[in-house]
Image 1 (cartoon, rainbow, N blue to C red):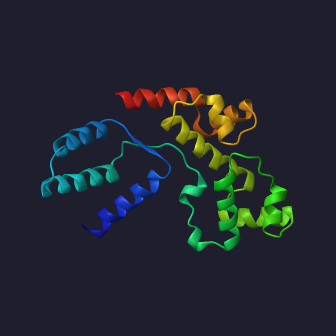
Image 2: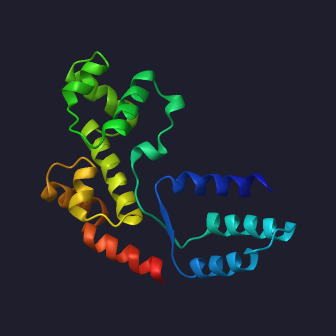
Length: 188
């Protein structure tokens, strides 16, 4: 496997952390390829699997479902403070998270923390937290049958109207439309 191919597949796997969907014609091509390997255990099936990965990794029919900064965030390159903060968000996104509490966790004033976080992540803390929560929402919309109201509260939004506004701003459609479009695309 050449370096360029493995690089494309690595990029596909990184994108998969955000959730991805493939549209036509790629979707139908992959369905056909998968049908040829069902039940087979020979080496040709493995090669077909690699071919599927290559097709998916080079497809132009890809739709990324969410883009939480945490999904693309390389914690190895950043400081211990940023790792502490992102882990706290990952474990507590469904609760109220106050800037004052986070700043206190890393022994900084709110103002100093805000500048520090923005410099390190290119996002304000509030924006980062909201994007993370919207990533959770996207995952729940596509993987569960929970109501939109339940999803909004499970993702840490304390107001349905704020949730709807934030979701629509990010995706240009309402959560309900997003869910309907996703379900329609999956059932094709």
